[in-house]
Every structure is written in structure tokens, then in C-alpha cells.
Image (tube, rainbow, N blue to C red):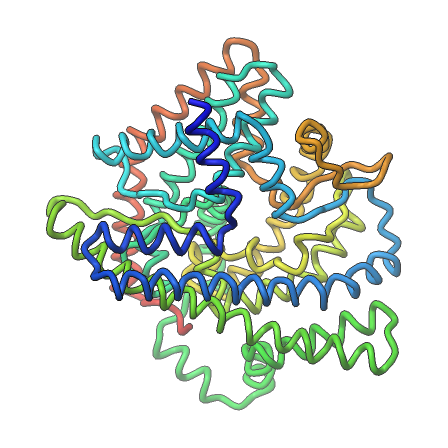
Amino acid sequence: MQVVMDVISYIVDLGSYIFVPMLMCLIGLLFGLKFPKALRAGATVGVGLVGVSIVSTLTSQSLGPVINEMVKVLNLNLTAIDVGGSPAAAVGFGGLLGASLIVIIILLNIVMVALKLTNTVNVDVYNFWYFAITAGFVQILTGSFWLAILAGVTHAILGLKVAVIMAHRTQQIIGIEAIAIPHGFAAASAPLFLLLDKVYDHIPFLAHRKMEEEYEEETKKGIGHYIGAIFGERIYLGLIMGMFFGIVAGYDFKGIADVTIKTAALMELFPTMVKMLVNGLIPISNQAKQFFTKHFADRELYIGLDSAVTIGHPVTISVGFLMIPVFMIVAAVLPGNTTLPLGEVPFAAFYVCFATIVHRANRRRTIVSSLIFIPIVLWISSWAAPMFTELAHNANLTLVAQNQQATTMALGNLFILIPTLLAEIPVVGAIALIVIDVAVIFGGKALEKYYAKEDAKFEETIGIESL
């Protein structure tokens, strides 16, 4: 068993831009893709990941300092420091619990696919750290290794079910066939967005528009048209947001100009790098669809991927950048919040990506849902801070200064919160988690059918909003 754990730990430590391309190439070969095409597809995915990493680093380096200045200007005296997602992954995989979960969840996924209990094969192994964090919190609170494993598995099962329910809509909005998103955070945001989407159906201002109505609106040259044109263009929005950041931070002209053009560049570069990532996935996705059609004629199977493949959508990018100052402002005034947004703020698009999918790229709905979601993220990440700080300490990682707590907004996650709270209840907690798992696995079929009918009706009567 220890040998298996050591091998898994070594593979994870390779990093996503090495491990994921190797995995994608292998998957392509298993699905029948010729070696040169599989190699090219895997390498393209790797190049895309490196590109996203470079742009992410540029984002952090360019926006990090200005955000720090904004924190000072806004006087955000908050004690739980958002250290970002990468340190959180290191904490999650920092012990036996995380390595054990990888093996257990992979085996569980294989069994569920074989028994037709899910249609998603989750290859996004790197982001299993979300499940490991859930398990880690439960182990801290209860001292039980196996109860912790159960909580982590519950998180994974919930993500798989959301991925299947939203698979068709995800493929339609993102433009890649045979994929699903079981990501530990993105999938966890879906239930709230799905609930809100039902509410929005009764609000005329947030209604979906027919394609011909969109066209008519675009031909009008009123002030609304020009405002929409400005905020609808990534480069213009980047210029506006960059200028806003620089002014609030108190920069001089050179500093404002620098952050302005860099923010505009980031708005353009992110989709370009994600497109490279997507270009590598498309041949694998197409081959997977052919394989599934041939060998599983009675089933529709999906490859479970990282939510990064969704980030290049124009609605996600534009709304994500709009949410950066909102995160800061809400953190400053939200009662009960202790989280100081830092490490994850430049990547706000990841926090709204599933809203774009659930709301079918309806920009207005995505903005409103994001505004509702942000306080929830901050509250839950504040709740998680003491436990995450203890986990980091147990993994011998010092992430913050003395008298501070570490957290990350990625912990502002309902699929972490709910299993952890349930597991705390003696005896009943374990039973509740098992009941949830069984209900989700077997009872989730009804939700799959419901949303399949809803998507079909939407396509027939309204159609997808212009992207």
C-alpha cells in the first residue's frame, strides 16, 4: 500500500503541466487515437497549461501589488489571509489522507462507471485536493480517519453528479463535446446557481432573449448600445478595470498606465491560452465520443475535466474581472467575514465560471449570481480558516505570519461545508453522509432527466444567448 501511495505522491508532485499532458496522451491512445495525434494533443494541452500558468503568474504579479495597495487604502483589517489555491493543494496532499483518497476515489469512479451509476470519468486528479481538504477538516474535528474518508468521498460523489446533470449544457456553452466538470469548487457552486436560475425565470429584466431580439437590440445605436459595446469588449473592460485599480490604489500616472495596459492584456491573453488548452482537448474529446459510441452504444460517457477549460468564455472573463473590486469591497463591509482576499482575487473568473454555464451565458444572470455568491464564499472561507491553518501546520507548511490564520477563497465551498458539518454529529453524521451518497447516486437520475428536458425545451423555444 505504501508503494502505491509513494507512486501517486510522485505523480502528483510532477505538477499539472507535466502530469496532465501525459494523462491526456494516454487517454487519447486508450480511446484509439494514433500516437502522433495523441502526442500532439497531449503536448498542446501541456502548452495550454503552461500558457495559463504564465498568464496566471503575470496576473498575480501585475494585480497582486495593486490589490495589496487597495487593501491598505480600504483599511481591510482582516486576520484570515487568502493564500491562494496552490498552497491549498499542497496542504490537501500533505499527508496519508490525501494520497489514500486519490486511490479510493479513482477506484470508486471506475466501479460507478462500470455499474452505470455515473457517466463521468473524472481525470482531473490534481484537483482531488478539494476532497482531501474536506477529509482533513473532518479528521481534525472528529479524529476519525474513515469518517474523514467518507466525507471526502461524499464531496467527490456530489461533484460527479453535478457534472453529469450539467454535462450537456457545459458542452453546449464551452463548445467541447463529451466533457463534464466535476471540479471540487466549480461543481459545488452549481446548486446555488441552479436555484437562482429558477428565480430569474420570473424576473423580466433577467429573462433570456431570443436570437432575433438580440439582433434587433444590437442594431439600435442608443446609449445602452454603446455602453454594452464597451463592457462587452474584453480589451475595453480591461482598460477600465485597470484604470480603476490604479486610481483606487493611489498610483501615479505611470503606475496607473502600467496596470491599465497589463489588465487589458490579461483580459485578452487568458482566453487565448485557454483556447490552446481546448484545442488539445478537442481531438481527444472527439475520439472519446467515437469510442463511447462504438463500445457503449447504449450510453453517453463524459471525460471529467478541470474548470480551467471554461475560463476562456467571454462572459466568464468579463464578469470575473468585474468581480475583483467587488471581492475587496464586500470583504471590507461583510459582517462576520475574517477573510482578506489576496491570493485568489486575480482569478475571480474561476469563481463565476459555472454561473456562465448554468445561466447559459446570460450576462445579467451571471453578474447577479456572482454578487450573491461572493458573500457566501467569504463566510465559508472564514469558517474554514482555523481548520485550514491547523492542516497546514500538520503538513509542516508555514503560510502566514504569527497571529494570523491561513485560508483561501477556494475553501468557500458548499461541498466542503455540508459534509464537514454533518460529520461532526456523533453517529448520525456518518449515517447522514451515507444516505446522501446513496440518494445522490441513485436518486440523481431524476434530476438528470429533468434538466435534459429543460435544456431541450430551451433550445427549441429560445436558443443559446449570443456568445
